Length: 275
Length: 342
Image: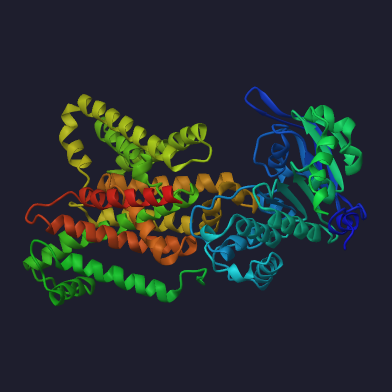
């Protein structure tokens, strides 16, 4: 029998070394009309970190990720390795930052391989340029890593939710970014896929020079895989630091308006009779 | 399970070209007066090689009536299909097209205004209509997409169609107002709004060819960006596509293509909807293959539609737009049904 505690250490917890500063967010504010979604938020991410952004619905978590990829207008600065993101090209940014979104609605019958190949967009310069071995290898490796090799010729419209998410995970692996942003990537996946996706990412981030920032709702998942956490509420920062320091009752309870730990314990206790 | 090549292969270019050429020959030969193929080939050959022209009837029918018309029809079909394919990729919506979005109506209003107000550019006859049509096509796209994004960020099929319908109605009522005020120009406006490639000239064909090569070329070089958009605009941004620049470039190219086509042949609806849809079933959704295949497919589709318009009610001739709309409406319902099912 595997000890549960040991397993959780095995699958996650990147406490290893903290390398160079990758992402620097300073005084980030985002407003939609008169509604301020993110309010003067500052944080940074270094190599080797897996930062979990947690908080109730409407806290502005996904908006923070959108700002990093220039998907929303914002004030404040977002810099990647010291360079203002606004001043680097989209392709340059994509080599540094990859995103795995929550939902995907592909409109046409692209094959798995075609979607994964898009991950190499930032690397290949022209439409007429032939295939480069390097790109081919990245695509093949990504497909193999995510277990999508057998389905590479399959139409993405015919995939299950889990397979589709793995296709996009393969795309972002092929993109070979240094920083991976995850926006509740397993929200609508069943447990098997949830486990698979998180384990794959845990493997990925172990390589030197990489880091992950993810938005998650499931606090247990956050605790199992994250090294650090950032707790937000209504666009504002409540607490940040190492994960066990942040996810504590004194921070969580006022934000969620409930006794979070008691609830978690109660949920777990449902399984006691099974042991 | 399919393994599709990434590019449109040379053999496919040859095959599609042959089919297009064959249909072009058919359209030159068949008509109210049928001319046998050997005769047609002989006439064209002697014209090409600069031999002395015989002044026969078939000579003048082929060289001054059918050939320029066939060129114009083929190029209009290609241009409209390319525009449709590009827009369907950009908006990730298989129902997007100049006519369903209302861009063609916008371009028509521009052209009608140019005729009514007598807008001309010195030294370039006809160019006033064309420039106004292009300008209005682009402005229409901006208005329509601006409205659509405001109302429904995901640009769902229903929103697009609703806005397209409303916009088209708005444009045609504006057009009616313009026509009411320009009673003296009513004849040339009516003639133009009928939308026909009946009086095509080699000059028109040359203009279409230039627009097609320039805009088609630019669109073709954006095939990978269009692929990314067709998967999703956010995904395109994530993999490193300069979303804003791509959108602007594609919209300008589409406006020019539609504007030029409308100013030469009036509004010919649904070509950009029907062809890319059919072609996608053959070559797949990858724009590196879809764009060239759509260009050929569009030429073939519009040539056949034109042929049908000429011979179905012979000796009367149907406007070409009637034929494309008949086919287009059916295909539209079919695609709409499919997207709803998905």
